[in-house]
Image 1 (cartoon, rainbow, N blue to C red):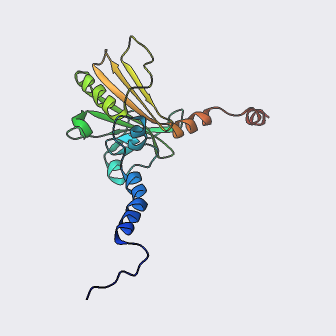
Image 2: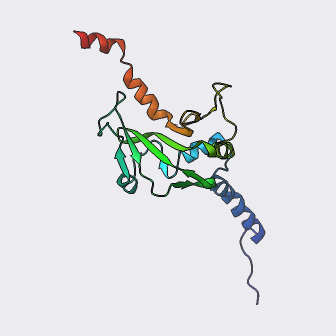
Image 3: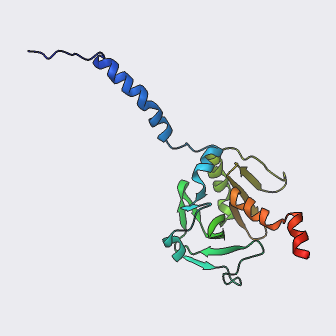
Length: 195
């Protein structure tokens, strides 16, 4: 004896309905593909360092203050650290990073300074183009400076001829705006401070 299907929906209609309802969940859960500023915003840093966030305990254990600063905040109330890398920091795309410095504001990561050998410069540029798409600005046609600017994260890739090094600077836009706003005091505050 075969059981009777008493539901208003047939089996095929039920399957199609479930697929249609689940489709948005699948499409929104996918990670962004490299090659756009949206990928830069999602990555929000490099090598496990995330801009705007606190350093993890394991990351903090490998930090030391930059020579001469001894943990004192700079003019912007930021503290800069050097991250010690045993055998270089390997990141996506086979890049080897020689040296990393981190700048924090209120213990949150505002800048990541990534240093690499100039001989690997074109490999770094090629990877950045693959990851973040075409640069949004090239401030000077005669210098090797490339900028990617989203509304949350900025990256500036620069090559220094005199030191034979290249540097990429990742910046958290929101925290940097907060640092800049702190520098500029409104006029009423200046008047009350002078009285």
